[in-house]
Amino acid sequence: MKTKTYAGISAEYSKLEQSKIILIPVPYDGTSTWQKGADKGPDAFLDASENMELYDIETDTEVYQQGVYLAEAVTENESPEAMVDAVHQATKKYIKKNKFVTVFGGEHSISIGTIRAFNEMFEDLTVLHIDAHADLRESYEGSKCNHACAVYEASQNTNLIQVGIRSMDTIEKTVMDEEKTYFAHKMAEDDNWMESAIDQMTNNVFITFDLDAFDPSIMPSTGTPEPGGLLLYETLEFLKQVFEEKNVVGFDIVELCPNKIDKSSDFLAAKLYYKMLSYKFLDEAIDDDFESNFSETSIGNNKFSKYNTEDDY
Ligand SMILES: [Mn+2]
Image (cartoon, rainbow, N blue to C red; front, top):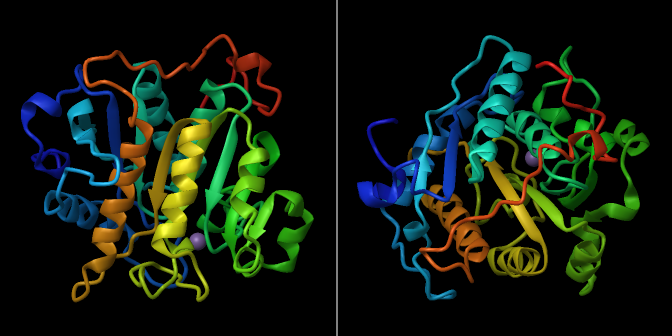
């Protein structure tokens, strides 16, 4: 994995110092319960990215020229907790370098680490969780770092907004804030859901995108497909608005479980990633410095966060 660059871009756009964007692969699949294979997600995503046009028609940009550094993959898999710690550390390290940090999984439990890092570094964080599943269990099969618990911590410490949800257990209702949950069956008949969700966001937004939020007709390669999901253009319309109106501070994309025969899902994941970058850097000149606006001094003041600088991970 380390021998190549993101999308095969040249050295000039892929060196750490000059890159505004960091891509951290996390090929982890330790706790998934049904179909295994999310550990193969980053490689399939990188292969598809390499075979994709890097000019984005809609935005008329070539966002890779902002620089994309492919970081060393986080491969810690001693335990779910150790993996979450390693992801947390790697994410935080690059945020501190004033980079726009993105993470590609791996199963959804990796997001516990990414969200923890962003919540420590950005004030009043909104976590926009796009997924078929609520992922609000406090612990599952003996671990708080199971994929079924991906956003439990975020529900306690951040402004969590959930979109596309169509599968959950009754026990998760005790944790869920239904005012900030956009169920798929309601989104299908409510033209206002995008505006309403954006209205509920604080300025700093981290997006955690589980690919099973998409309809299985366009995204079959995921560990736990659920019927009745999002299609491409409504998803892009929503994301574009979020990037336009809010300060998106980073994102992760998880749960690509590649299929040897049908590679279309890998290309959808690659396209989604590139679209999100294109929206983020839409108005940013290639030569301008990137200002990620993180603040180490804000840590103790983050009203949503139970963490502080003294915490040791
Ligand atoms: Mn899911």
